[in-house]
Image (cartoon, rainbow, N blue to C red; front, top):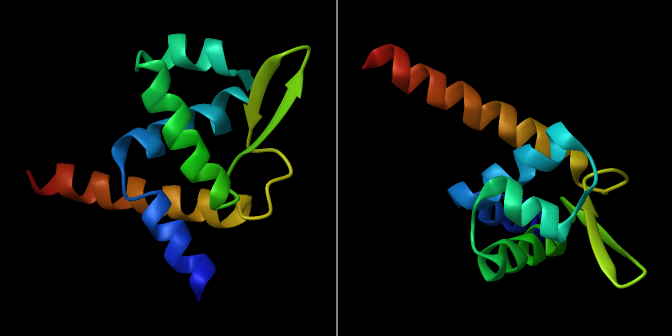
Length: 98
């Protein structure tokens, strides 16, 4: 149960959802490139990626001093994709009502 609570908390933030969606769409990205792509401050991106990593939704690796993040091989990736589908479905329902 603790894993589910952590998962829900980790995607209870629009910035983390955006970062997760970006990594799912683009694949592995260098941290600097991800910061540039999402147009958010470096500290914000780094802090939110650490939260996603603790929930096992993303993984990182370091190569030659550069940090790369991805969703590939993450144990909770299936849950992350499912949560994103649910969030998108709810958002589309809200837009239809408006």
